[in-house]
Length: 140
Image 1: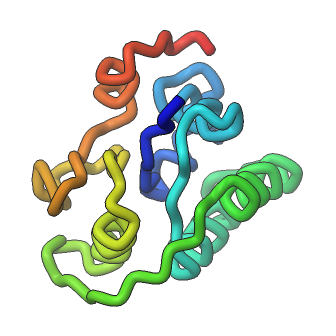
Image 2: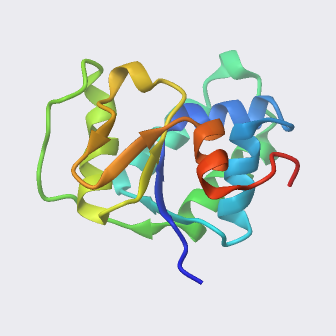
C-alpha cells in the first residue's frame, strides 16, 4: 500500500489537540495509524513544540508530549535545500520548503489563504478535503 506523503501545518495539530472529534484529529490519527507518511523538518518540529506549549491553548502536558512524540517518531525527517518566500506569513514557507523537498502529495493546513493551491507537485488542502480525497471517514 502506498501511503500518501503529507506535510502537516502546526494549526492542524493544535486543532486536533483542542477538538478530539474533528477532521484535523482524524488526520493526525491517520498518521499515528501509519496510513499517512508524515514528512517534517527540524524547523517544523521546533515550531510544533513552540506552538503546542503556548499557555493560551491550555493543553495538558501529556497531550503535548503525545503530539510531539508523534511528530518525532512518525515523521520522515526532510532537510530542505531551497528557501522560498511565497507565503505572506514567513513561517509558513518552511512547510512549502519541506513539501517540495519531500515531494509530498499534500500539505494540510487550516489556513489555506497563506498558501497557493499547489506547490510544485504538492496539493494544498485542509483536513476535510484530505479526508474526502482519501475517501476516509472522519470517525476513525
